[in-house]
Amino acid sequence: MANEELGRTLRRLRRLASLTQEELAERSDVSVDVIRQLEQRRKQSARLPTLHALANGLAVELTTLLGDPPAVASGGENDGPRFVAMRRAVMPALWGPGPQPTGPDFSLDRLREQIADGWSQYHAAEFETVLKALPDLIDDARSATVSGSEDDRRASRVALGKALQLAGHVAVRMGKTDLALIALERATEAAEQSSDPLLRPMLVNSVAWTYQRQGRLDDALNIALSAADDTKSGGYADTADGLKVWGALVMSAATSAARGNDYQRAAELMADAETEAARVAKLPSGGDNRMVSVFSPSSVRIERVRLAVQYGHPEEALKLAKGMRLSKDTPASWRTWLLLDVARAHTDLGDAAGAVKTLESLRRVAPTWMRHHTLAVAIVRDLWALPHHPPGLRSLAEFLGVGD
Image 1: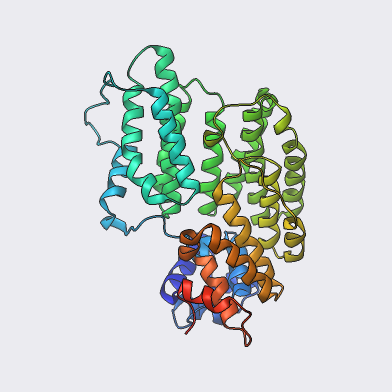
Image 2: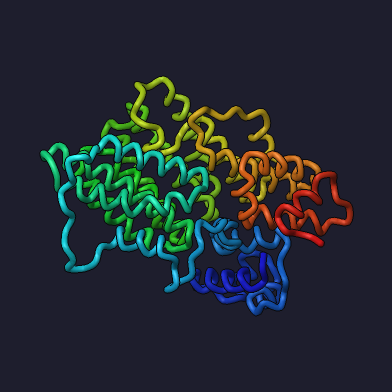
């Protein structure tokens, strides 16, 4: 990663955590001199073990430290017109005209399908496509909430909530977590007047993820567990969709617990999730999978792999991943993350050939995503620094712009 970006991000995350350089050094077991050199941009980069340690010391994902793959080009006040349009759709002008009723050609079913397609594109990392469509989707959904019968308006609020939730996720991917929380807050307002009792807990899960990105681990853990309890006590976990929402919340809580160094609680939560995930296929089928939380035996196993590799158990990660068969409804983003985590585990174990083989698979299934992913670049950079390069590494290095 570029020295300038890493140093700036490290300093920002350390200050958000209210840590001195010395305190971060103690938490991460990384020398204060290395931290100082990175923040002052005198050190060009850091090896993956050092980056892992710093991320754990800051209680954030490694990708939060490295930077997510760029969703779309952005830059503070000079954000491009598409992002400005999405921001305006999420936050219409104060004292401006309210939404106008839909026209005769409007179809709520067609709008739902377009929003579901947006979620599929999001999981496929087609962020530019999603960003282009979002303003119209949000505006159309707002118009639908003031049209038709009360039942129509309540159903339209579900569509509005899902469109605003999608905007929140895109904002997180762009590093705009405050905008994400505004979008999710407005989505929650729609959910509370909608016809879908599962929409609010799905939005809670998105808020918990955003809080994790901000380092608010206790907040993320508490709201996820509370919403999971409410979902189960309300009887919603007796349906496939309701169980998926409950499971996603429990996995989110496990992630927050692990990042807060409570590995025992994280393991217990993931064990509960894995047990319950087996019930999903046995329950009455729900609605469109694209519009419901991701939860299945496959997603639980993928999350267990992710947690194992993030918290220093690469052997366990590879054992969990071996021979895994992914269900058909596993989103593309989860499949690509699994390959990246397996590559990380091989790298941590010093198995360069295994890492290259996995990265070659990742390149075949998600070349655009991989090319922009900062963690993929960091892994290849680490492998390139080795004295002996396994077959295939040069091609990967050239593809990612690493090396000679």
